[in-house]
Length: 175
Ligand SMILES: CC(C)(COP(=O)(O)OP(=O)(O)OC[C@H]1O[C@@H](n2cnc3c(N)ncnc32)[C@H](O)[C@@H]1OP(=O)(O)O)[C@@H](O)C(=O)NCCC(=O)NCCS
Image (cartoon, rainbow, N blue to C red; front, top):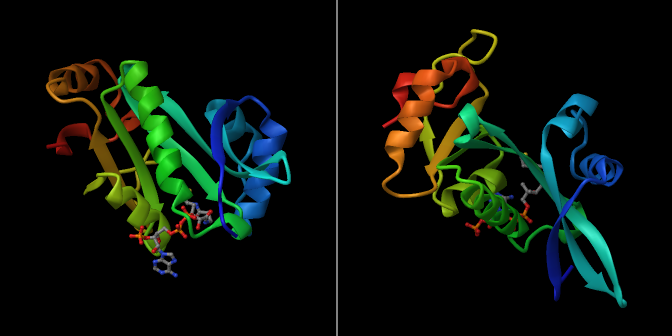
């Protein structure tokens, strides 16, 4: 599928996000809680004079408002192959910077090469998450982060001091 014209817009249509999620993933679909926790965008392509949704993505603000967690992204199978995920990363970073966030983080399943390539291309680097929120060492996922603004790392550190390490991406491991 060629993608001649694309637009990405924020949406609060959670049913549409859930529908795209079911098309992008075979299983493990977003829960109601996850749907309501995030801010969502959809990507649409123009076909025969109408805009058709083909992808979605979300983010959650964490770390006392300084961090964003890049939540789920999906591109429907027919629209894959045009590096749309990279654009969905960029749109969330723009939103995060505009809202004063200085760091973005996410995780990727160890065998999800497509997603990993998109994240690496966009400048995300791996870090070690000592334990997850259940106190277990994660094994199947690789955690990645990116500093969004230069010269503001102090702000990130300050937010670590005031918050729960389990709620944030790095604890003391961040360099
Ligand atoms: C992951 C996903 C969003 C990527 O969609 P996309 O932006 O259309 O990705 P593309 O097909 O353009 O491929 C992205 C990269 O992976 C590479 N790639 C594609 N197929 C590949 C394969 N079979 N093996 C290895 N690399 C592959 C592409 O070459 C590209 O890398 P490059 O830019 O360095 O050349 C999409 O595949 C998807 O929705 N998958 C199911 C849901 C999912 O896994 N979401 C991400 C985790 S939340």
